[in-house]
Amino acid sequence: MAETLRVNPITCAGHGVCAELLPELVTLDEWGYPIVDPGPVPPALDRGARRAVTGCPALALKLMRN
Amino acid sequence: MTTALNMSVPHESAPGGAARQAAGLPRLLPAAPEDLRAHLARYGPTPYRGQPDALVADVEASGLTGRGGAAFPVHRKLAAVARAGARQGRKVVVANGAESEPASRKDECLLRVAPNLVLDGLQLAAETVGATEAHLYLHGSPGPEILRALAERAARGLDRLAVTITQAPPRFLTGQETAVVNRLGGGPALPAFQPPRISERGLGGAPTLMQNAETLAHLALIARYGPRWFRAVGTATEPGSMLTTVYRPHARPQVAEAAIGTPLRTLLGDGDGAGGPGAQAWLVGGYHGTWLPLPDAAGITLDNASLRRFGAAAGAGVLAALPSDRCGLAEVARVAGYLAAESAGQCGPCLNGLPRIAAGLAELAGRGHRRQIRTDLERWSGLVEGRGACHHPDGTVRFVRSALTVFEPEIQRHARGQCSATDRAPFLPLPQGMPTSEEDWT
Image 1 (cartoon, rainbow over the protein chains, first blue to last red):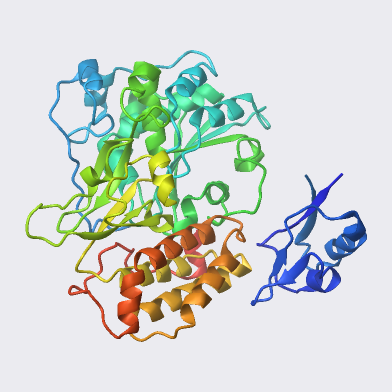
Image 2: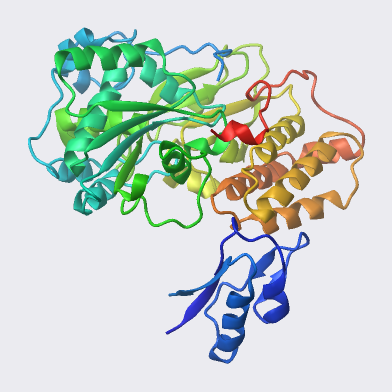
């Protein structure tokens, strides 16, 4: 089932780990906050997406079922 | 909020009772504040239906939408909360009268002149969804009229649920739905991220119906006179009337009830009609609203179908005609500074972007700005849009982007070191002494 990445902008503290672990889907804005690809996570990036979610120190990144 | 502005309520003298109701507008605003006796003489007792859910079909047929700004269909919220199972025996209704938008005065006015209509609507909504508690959320301390209405109704045993009043802190975002729930729960009035719908899990986890104060007043009239009566004014797709707060050149700010679909020109035309400076642009929907160019937008009407063509929406009914003798850029920069200061500071893009946008606008409002500032403003706008837990960045960007388009000629003038304004007095109202400390959220 397709999933999308969502960032909780309140808990996100701009650590930037997600962009490091998953540059294919996450870039950082000029203040260091993630801009997340809104589309479904491609199967090839599924593992990377899960690593980014578990790697977020603020627990701000989630995979959401569509 | 102080009452530095004088409000007047335009009305036509009309006979009382149902005949008056059939006559058209105003529906919500009596000529003078009505106490319970006058209210009962005009409308009779609260028309309880005797069972939950009974009013939903009438509200659906009326086409009533929320008057707090989002214009969400009221029957859908009613049905959702009516359907939801109570949590630990608890279901909640909230009348939201916080009206945190500093330019909006319509709910304050309504609660002053027709408090019993709002309270009728609150009780009827409570019956409809099967609520066990009722709240009234207000900006500032409750006025004497609402306190008197509550006391008189309690003395007569008219209300089925006691109403708890909670005061909102004087911040822009404290009327936002999730902020209200947080505040009523004893926390700070801060927006939350992606909560479950409050109709499922709101205050204390209980299903919660929240409606704007004006919406509840309309509901109280629909319960009495029915959907056909409600649809007698307004447009087919956006029926009824709405309260507006109107700012015009050389005129006192005014709270006016208008049929949806009324030409904006009727509401925003020159105050004196002769001699005074006309308007150079219209602002529709308040500080999260949209600037409209004149004369291009002069034919527009007060309904979202018409306003949408200019990317605008009626919102909570704040309408302003900026006088020709003011600097639009100075006005926009001042308001943007306020909006930046009113960021809850919870989300990085809003916290970082809004002050930069405000500073950029302040530069445009000065003379001889850097060329690059226009592209900076566009980039920052794109970076904050859609990236907040609430819609504060989105609304701010709507206001800013429309201003950059509408006031483009003035930007060019300022670039050459000129300004067309002859009057430097601020036109759009802001709260005095902008609060910025953390404690202001409670």
